[in-house]
Amino acid sequence: MTLDLLIKGGNVVFRDGVRTVDIGIKNEKISCIAEHISEDAKEVIEANGQYVMPGMIDTHVHISEPGRTEWEGFETGSKALAAGGTTSYVEMPLNALPATINKEALGLKLDAASNQNYVDYAFYGGLVPENLDKLEELADAGVLAFKAFMSDITSDIPDDFTNVDDYTLYKGMQKLAELDQLLCIHAENPSVTSKLAEEMVREGRTTAMDYVESRPIFTEVDAVQRAILFAKETGCKLHFVHISTSEAIQEILKARDVGVDVTVESCPHYFAMSAEQVEEIGPRAKCQPPLRKAKDQEKLWDELLNGNIDWLTSDHSPCTEDLKQGNIFEAWGGISGAQNNVDLMFDLAVKQRGLPVHKFVDLIATNPAERFNLTNKGEIAVSKDADIILVDPNQSYVVKREDLYYKNKHSAYEGRQIDCRVTKTIVRGNVVFDLDKGIVGNPIGKLISAK
Image (cartoon, rainbow, N blue to C red; front, side, top):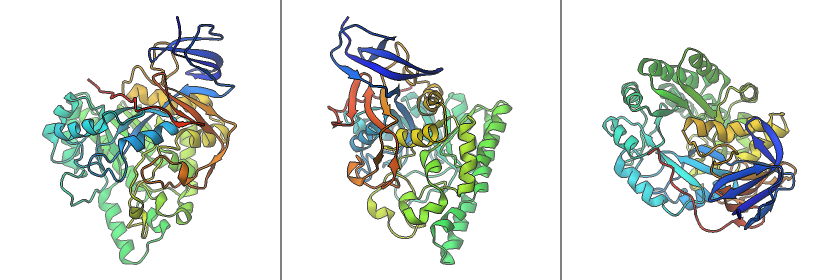
C-alpha cells in the first residue's frame, strides 16, 4: 500500500499521553500508527520532535458572509483558522445578514460558504423571539446546534439577530428538548448591563475600566442561573459560551452535579489579557462579557487547570477597523482571535503553567468533538479524519498585522510575543497551511451536517 501522507518522528498526542510514533494517512483518514512505518508515501513530513495533535475544533466563529462580508468572509476567515491550527469550525448565526434563523437564511449561508473554506465547517441555527416555529426546519436542515443571546442586542437593521426574552428562552428550550438539540447561550443580564452602561456614558465615565464595571460578574452569574433553571424545567441540553468568571463556572458545576446536561467554554482572550490592560490595548480588546480584572482572571485560570472548563473557542468576532474607533462604549464589541488560539494557549497553559499536553488537546479538540457528535474528528486514532496540526514549542514569534489573514488586519494581540508556533495544518490529509509556504492549495473544506 502506498500512503498519501506519512508523518514521521513526531511527539504524537493521544488521549492518554504522548508517544513518539509515525502516522500513515490514506484516503483522508488515519490508516496506521506505529513506532516505525516503512510503507512508501506520496509525501513525507518529518515532524522532528514537534508535537503532532488533532487540529482545533473551534465551535465559536463569526463569519459575516453574506450581508456583512466587508467584516469577514469564509475565504479569509478560514485561512486565518487554518494558519492558527484549526481544522474544523462551527459558524455562529449572527453578524451575517440575514441572521440564520430560518431555512432560507441557512441556504444563503450554505451557498456563500461553498468552495471558499480551507477547513471543514458547520453552522448554528439561531433562537430569537420570532422563530419558535422555525427551529424544527433548521434542525432538519442539519445545523449542529442552536444559539441564543440573553444579553442585549440592539439593531434596527432588518433580518439582524435579536436577543431572547424569558418566554422565548423557555418555549425555545421546550422545543429544542423535543428535538434533542443543544442550545448554546450567551449569558449576561441585559436589563442591568444596559442601564449601567447608559449611566456611565451619561456621567462621562467612558474609560476601559468603566466599561468593565458596566458588566459586573454578577450579571453573568445571574443569567447562568436563570438558564440552568429553565433547563431543569425543560430537559434541554445546554452549553454556555465564552464564560469569563469562576463564579459562573461554579454554578454550572453545581447544575451538572444534580443532573443537568450542561457544558461550558471559555476563550483565550480571557486568559491572555486582563481588564487592567484594556486601556493600553484599546477597543481592539473590547468584548462581551468583558475581560476581567487580574484577580478574577487568576480564579478563571484555576478553573481551567482544575479541569472545570470543557473546551476553548476563539469567539472570533471581526469587524472593519473604523468600528473599533471612538470610546470603548461606542466601539464594536468583538475580538479577532481565530489565528491565535492554539499557539497562545499552548504557551500560556502548557509551557507556563504546566497543563499536560493531552489535557490541552481535550480543550481544543476532543471535548468539542464529543459534545457535537463529530465522531470522525477530535483525536489521533486509526480511521479518524486526518485532521492534524504540528506545533513547535521551541519557536517564538511576534504577532504582526501583516501576517494576519483576516479581511481586516487588526488584533488585540498585535505586538505580543508567543513562545510556540503552529508549523503545519492538515485537513483530512491535505496540507492547507505551512509555516514556510503560507496557505497551500485551493479551499478543500467540507460541510459538516448533523444530517
